Amino acid sequence: MIEKRVQYATEPPEVEFFELPGGLADVWIARNVKKIEDVADNGPDPADAVPCVYYTADVAYMRAAVTLDEITADTDAAYKRAAAWAPEAITQPTTLERIEALEALGNDILAAMFGGE
Image 1 (cartoon, rainbow, N blue to C red):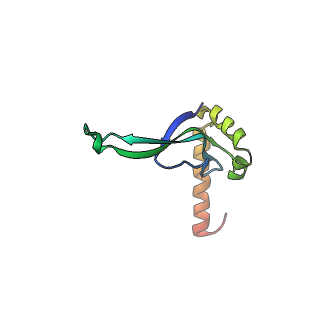
Image 2 (cartoon, one colour; image 1 turned 180 degrees about the vertical axis):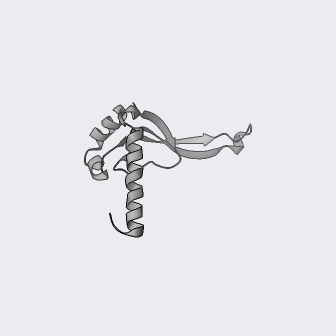
Image 3 (spheres, rainbow, N blue to C red; image 1 turned 120 degrees about the horizontal axis):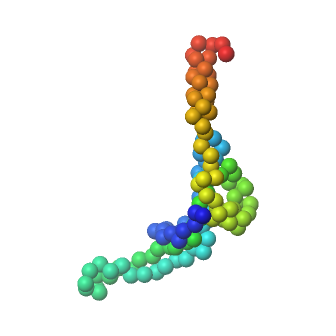
């Protein structure tokens, strides 16, 4: 479960979405955003106190094969999915799959440089 109470210096967006190579995206969804007005203690003299504002929010994170449109179409469902997401859900490629991908990339580079297939 990836869900935390987070503090921000500015009001957080409802959705932060970052596309990654390979069709995945990192997604953060904020709920229960609250503006907090407080006083920063700058030493023993109360006259040195400075008013400050910050925000808190419940934030859920996931890495998934989703689009921004899918997330924004139903942010409540997306938040629940993100809160329940576990990093183990992403399977890493095997060593053989990684080698095959590198060989295919090398062949594509050679074909682009020298022509042919």
